[in-house]
Length: 307
Image 1 (cartoon, rainbow, N blue to C red):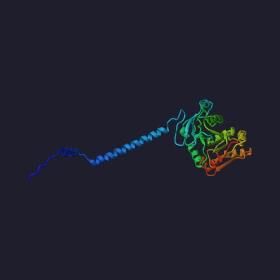
Image 2 (cartoon, helix red, strand yellow):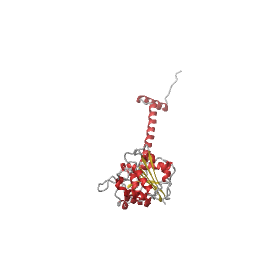
Image 3 (tube, rainbow, N blue to C red):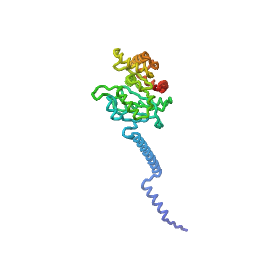
Image 4 (cartoon, rainbow, N blue to C red):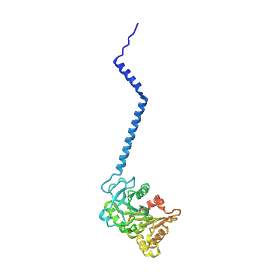
């Protein structure tokens, strides 16, 4: 008995599809792998876009004078133009780091004066200054506190070498107190190398601003000579009225520790019972690396209040 086989429309469709697949070299396993790879590439592209958007957001201008430069470095502020034009050696831009969660109350202010290698108008030269201090403040629980870092120009308009001038820094401090919630009885000054020298000069000229002063590896500038004793003595008389703690490295061959020893001795001779000095026996010009990591520095400076 013979059987007759009929091809239904559905069966015919699948037969044609299979024949087409074989003739075209279609590989279902390879197609599946390609689909998986395309999904992975899509996810990677999306993550890249998210990262790029985040980077752009961090550099977005906040108002007319503030830019987020790098994490923990602070925010760039610009001095009041009317005050800026009265200065000779200061860049108009500076870093400010506000305490986390600040709600407007007046808080202590720590001013850091950088060394000679950071002079100019390139803010990347001073962006490393605040993170070191902010880390110590947070680690040893000394907040809330505002930290600021001004920048000294490399040269003045007439081409002479710029330096930390007390006259400029007084104007800068006025700008800070006009724009930030500063507790005027808890303003602290520190600086390293040229900034240590600037701390001696500013503190020696205007001690009334500060609750405490802590120069690190600071020289006495053109006043190193014995002929400059009258100026040193005048500074010492002023600094005898405020707590001073100096730090230096015994092996410093850039700024001799004798500068700090001489200044502290002069302050003590003038009656400064709160003046003291730490000289690290094995440290050179990098004494700041020890000082700004030490709990002693933060315990001492933040314990002071202007009287």
